[in-house]
Image 1 (tube, rainbow, N blue to C red):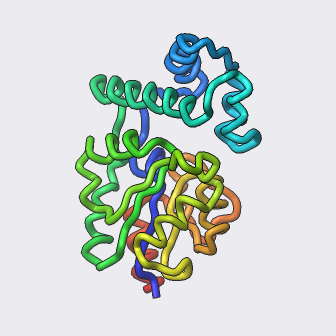
Image 2 (tube, rainbow, N blue to C red):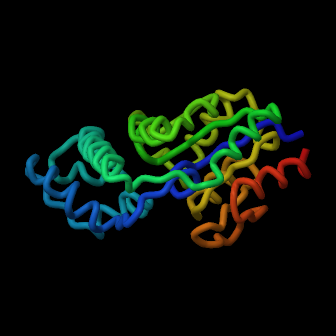
Length: 217
């Protein structure tokens, strides 16, 4: 029986108008890293994010990798606050469907590769935090545990006291699909931005997800 849902956050529940990952890194993150004497080009940084390189790779630049990611996440929070001031962070218009899912008695979790603080910030920005029983951002004790690693998803399952077969993973990216499947879950791909191969179900928005949940229960 379906008892819970684990959601991705960015590009699943909220989006960033005009966001470009390279531009964000080069204009926001690189200046902060240079203050610590670190020169790291975008392509190498991207590999540490996608998992092609371990997040500890940055230690070759003479900085503890946890400290490195704390610097990046501090900048990311500043960026999000600035984008919020400019009105460029927006919720998708169907996020009210979360309330309907809660009314159905489902346990809900939000899991993000962003930091805990960054994740909580965007959820609180649009009063979405109230829908979730647990929220997990990246864990500094296991930085390589971000999606597509199932670590955070499994952490959420444990917190909700759910077995993998009792919950759905909902997200927009291939990382969400992989993390969900590696945790033994069925995965729903929200196809607003693109259709990702390998998901078990596809929905165009969260209201369609509500209808899917009704059928699965």
